[in-house]
Image (tube, rainbow, N blue to C red; front, side):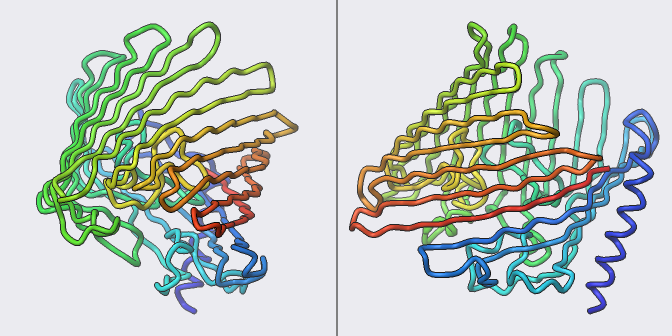
Length: 404
């Protein structure tokens, strides 16, 4: 009960800071950021439960408070705190942080708090260093990255990150990540004996074109056990993408490759292409993707968990190991009022080892009014199994966030 009041007090404090606006910018000695909000998700699966079935639903109110302080001209320190609670609302048995609906065997804390980020920064000329616990962006690290749910970082990483800007448009980033951190419930998650090594290049030097390449190596990757491996093994991965403007259309191509030394495991390869166009208040995007029947996961450094950074990520993510699959996705968006009405449809064709085909569609409305970001979304997905059975899921997601 006491922890519930602590989180509620933090929410109220966050609201007061939000009204004061952002305190400072990157040119001042200290900056502050944060958010308050909530996220609710209800599921109806295989016609076996009702929307009101709390065991299949998730809910959390959240508060995030962060600060960065310059210690001198070169060194700085940053920390980000996060808390979440159901505040006693009897509408879901699972929190949104972490995304716990996938594993009902674990009793997750409905009220908790964590240190999402805590790192020391160093800047000298065109060199930028970070050491400690931090969030990683998917454009920088597509095989190991951080997302946010209702403002809270889902997975943080502990290690060292170094970026060197060759020019205003070209930068090289190297990273050594020893552990992952998945909320206060799990704590640290070992990646491997010596951690993960990453090297990436981001090049915007070509007109209207962005090129990115990322390579990874993990010695004795422990995360493979989450994907069904009985032992750890050396693993490596290579990701690359090119995005450009061609004839008034935004177009891109993306590829990913994962391999390792596990006996009997096949390497995984993916190829994605996309094209999009905007007309005044309307936009459309088409994504086509192919993934071979490899055994190594394209998600979470081989852990088969989290979200995929492939462009063909959708309701099933973009990762079904052991299945040749072709994916087609159409995304549509129409500006409406203070926000946009979004629709998305996707179709998967498998090689019929376990699945035959699948399809999904999502309809939602996103808006920003009076500084509040809101999302109301309905999603439907269905997989046809090769034995004639079906896996079906419906979800309703409601999320409100106030950043400051």
